[in-house]
Image 1 (cartoon, one colour):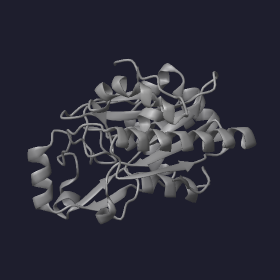
Image 2 (cartoon, rainbow, N blue to C red):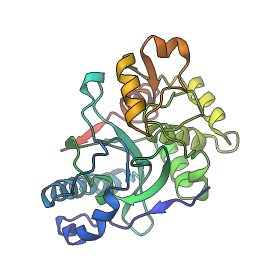
Image 3 (cartoon, rainbow, N blue to C red):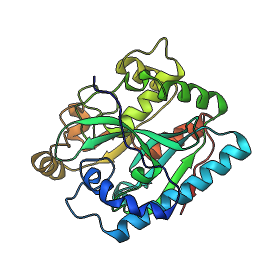
Length: 274
């Protein structure tokens, strides 16, 4: 299993634009919850992303100063998912490091491939790209959940449930593929019971026992066929036939996770940063 990959930007200031040339090479190589289109990263797009990162940094640090918050669910709007009644496309776990900066542990798809890896990145990288809408979502877990996540995310255990085969619409209760939100949600389960949960099947059983319900997308047969033929990172063959033939694609969405965390009182209501 490969080590967690890391990039270094965390400066909460628009002046980070000076680092743009170094970040452009990264931006096209690993993405999740975004369009994955091959287009240049313009100064305007970079400025928007980094300004959102700066605003998010201020909110997170204020939360840390006021409540001692050290871990939050952090989501972004990389694509327009309104036709599926969804708002946020991708999330990771943002945590405050001992040296001060906030880092985000999340899984990214290697664009143009059917593989994905786990990264630790600064807020600048997390919001770098042509997002659908420059708005972030923050959800603060309970102190007990934060503590469990912090210990898990900052240790080699962060890779325990990482599985490279990637599909953007992987079946929530399957193991053939693993998309980004699925990794983050299964990792939450493992962090909450690290001794008992050593694999993905055990993590999914824990999530089911806790009442998690995946998002159900209505994806017609023509769309499924087109997606599978044109994109390496989209597959439907892991979904049960009865659900797939009924055009019901059950996958882990940001909205379903945040609603579940609020419903089970594992986290507060979602807050937005615009």
